[in-house]
Amino acid sequence: MASDGRSVERLRAYLRTLSIEARTMLVEELERNLVSGGENADDDRVLQELRQSIRADTQAAPRISDIARLFFAPLEPFLIDARADHKRIGRIARVLLEPIWAWINRDLIPAEAKALGDDIERALASGDQDKAEHLIHALHDRALQRMRDTASTIGTDEKARRRLAVHVGTPRAAEDLGTLICILSLRNVLADLAGRLPHHIGTLDGDQIDSIKVLLDDIAGQADLDAGGLRKADFLRYSLILVADRLTAPWQLIRLATRAADSDEAGRIAETPYGSAVAIVFSETESLVSDLRVELKSGRPIGSILKRIHDSARGLRSEIDLSADSAWSRQLAAIRGDVSALLKAEIEATPAAVRRLLRPRPAKEIAPGAVLDSMEVAETESRVEYVGACRHYASELAINELSARAHSELTLYLETGTRVLIDSLRYAGDADGPFRESQVDVAIRFCRITFGPEYAKRLAKAAEVARQAAATDRKALSA
Image 1 (cartoon, rainbow, N blue to C red):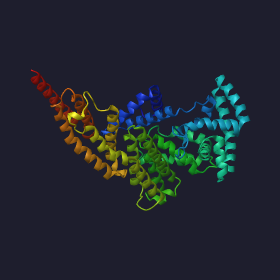
Image 2 (tube, one colour; image 1 turned 120 degrees about the vertical axis):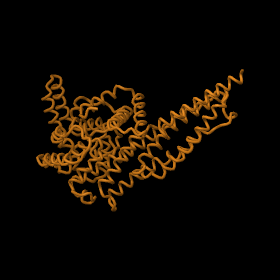
Image 3 (spheres, rainbow, N blue to C red; image 1 turned 45 degrees about the vertical axis):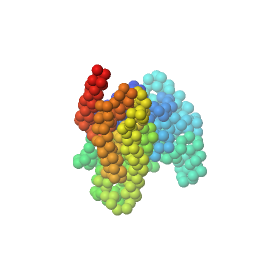
C-alpha cells in the first residue's frame, strides 16, 4: 500500500463501493489471518478503515450542505465515526456536525450565517473558489467569537451546560464546543503542520522523534496563540493527534513525551506540555476497549482490536515507568481490568460450547439426515478464534491464566475428540452419516484455528480414509 494520504483516501473510496456484507466478510478474513499469526501493518490499516466504514454506514449520519462541509473542513482530521456521547481527547463525532451546524444557523449567528451563506453559494455557483474560501474564513471568525462568548458564560455552571446541551442537541455539548473552538482557532497553523508532516510514519524513533519535536516546537513558537486565547498545550494536543494519525503504531506518540521530559518517569513527563501525548494514547486505548465491547456484542471478530489494545498497553508499560502509584498506572490497570472482564465470559464458555457441538453421540440420539446447526457452528467458531487471539495477546491484557486454561482444555479435547469422531465415520450408517460428517468437518475447522493448517490437512486426509473405508464396508455388506 502506498504510504501517503491519497492512498488512504483511495482506500476509503473503494471500501464505500462495497456492500456492508462484503466488508464484513473481508473483516473476518483479515481477522483470521491475524489470529493465525500473519501480522501485516497494511492489513491492520485496512481493518481499521473497514470497521470505521461499517460503523459510519450503520449509524447513517445525516448529510450536510456544501457550505457546512466547507465550514467543517478544518475538523476533518479530528472527526471520528462514533456515537454522539464519545469520550476521546481532541475528537468530534461526525454525527454531531449536522446538529452543531443547525445550532450555528438557528441560535448562534443566524443573521451572519444567512448573509455569508448566500454570498458563499453565489461564489461557488460562479466557480470563484478563492472568494468562497475567503467568505468561509469570515464565517469562521464570526462563529468563533460567539462560541468563545458562549463558552465563557458557561464556566462550571452545570445548569448552563445542560441548557447548551439542549440547544445544540448533543450530550457533550460543552466539551464538543471547547474542541470545536480550539480546532477552528488553530485551523491555519494545523493546516501548515499537516502539510509539513510525513504522510506516513512507520516507526517513530531516533532522529525522527527529534525532527518532529523540533517541527512542533518551531510552529508553536511562531504561531499567534494568544490571539485565540490558547496556549502551547492546546496547540500540542491537536498537533499530536495529527502525528498519531500518521503513525502505523499510534501508541508510539508516547516517545515524543519521554523525549521532551528526557525521562521515563511518569511525574516528570506529566509536567511537560508533551504529557498530553500520553493522555491521548490512553484516550484512544479506552476507545478501543469500547469498540471491543461493541464487537463482542455483535459477534464480529476481535483479533485486530485486541492486538491494538495489547500493543498500546505494552507500549505504555515499556516506555513509561509506571511501577509507582500514579494516575496513569491506575488508568492502565483499569483498562486491563475492563478488557479482562469483557473477555472472561467468552473465554470460559468456549470449551463447553465446543464440547456441545463435537460430543460423540450414539446413533439413537441422531435424527436421520440431521447435521449441526450452522448458526451455532459459526458462533462457536468465533469463540475458538477469540481464545486464540486472547492467548496471543494475554500478557498485557490480564488474561494469562484464563486464556491458558481455556486453550489447554480446547487443545486436549480437540486432539482426542476429533480422532474419535473420525473413527465414528467408519461405522456410520445412512441415517447418522450426515451428522457425523458435519461433526468431523467442524472439528477440522476448529483444529485449523487452534493447531494450524498443516495439522488440519492431516486430519482431513484421515477423515477421507475413514469415509472410503466406510464406503467399502457398505459395498461389501450389500454384496
